[in-house]
Image (cartoon, rainbow, N blue to C red; front, side, top):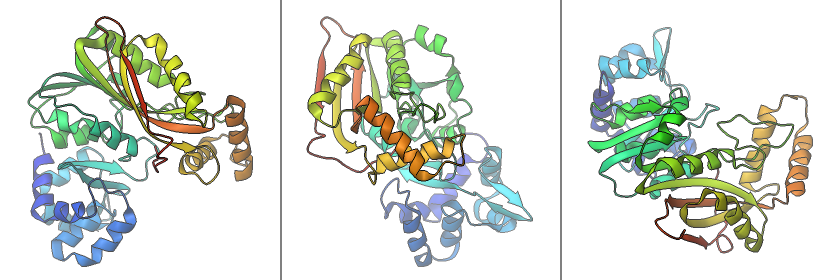
Length: 358
């Protein structure tokens, strides 16, 4: 690490901020919980808590005394902090902890900077990996790769287009000790060899006429970036390498129709796969995923004069035209075949609907 990351971590841990945070659950992103916890804290721990989680402004002199010049330099260098009129704040950014790794998320950014359910799902799939080369595709906060970058004999690369992803550089610096990660082109990735690929591609559908940005949308069927991951894996995985991928799949409401649909989409990739489908959500009003899709469509629509009911009507009409009745959470492990292609799909979605968002 260079200037500031180690001193910041040391001060945060020394003042007990992490100890209080994990009482609320690892990776907690509920601001209401943070507000409720705040009055219970005392002294410097409370000041740091409100600064690091709730975006509260504090005098720059107090911040300097609490965290030190190097820690404040780290925050400023990564544009995490803003200073004005002698006060400093993190704004909508917040410091989090998951499996003892510290990293920043952003509650206010339009980019993929939340610690989302897809990130948790991907971390749960990480193999024991202590040596080799890893390619991380479409990272969110970068938290998904922190368990790997901390390993001294693991090399991590990202696609060049992810260099400007908010928070990624700061969080990688928080999780490494003097290591350098690499940004490469897709062409170079496909000519390289990786023992592990991690991927959580944007896979939300984009309703025609209401386009969503690429960091959210996988196109009109949600498959655009999922397919790219499969293409890269087919070229870049070593013979014994694996790709762990988490994505959403829009399909029929009944599993009897969804399973062959998903299998037909995966057929051209020619890879072995082991899929787990833990849950689904119906695409209808009041269900979280549907509400999220409508909210995103309304937010990014060029026609800002549309009434909410008009957006709902357009979304529902498109879902009906495509026979999309539900969206499924898919967790998959992919590898190159050494002989006949091996395919396995375990579907729990009829037994558990869950409550998740992307």
